Length: 113
Image (tube, rainbow, N blue to C red; front, side, top):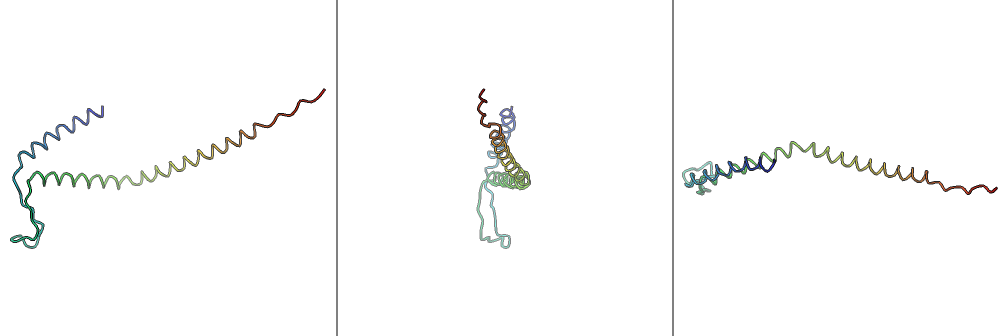
């Protein structure tokens, strides 16, 4: 089911992205000098679809980082619960060993008649 859902989402997305890159092959000039636009110190020309894909990737990274930060408390709680469970398992094991030692009392010899 998960594989089908991925196909239903990624296949149309891939088709749209391919169509977008074919339709937007023309170069655009990126200027990274906000103070001098007539003679910028740093500029370069790239196809428009590179700019669009870069924006998509940067947005996905920022969104993923935001989700990762938001879920930090849940990861911390899971680590703490895992540690507490390990302590409880060790305590149960020690208690079981003590019970086993107490129940395995040596048998007394039978009285002679």
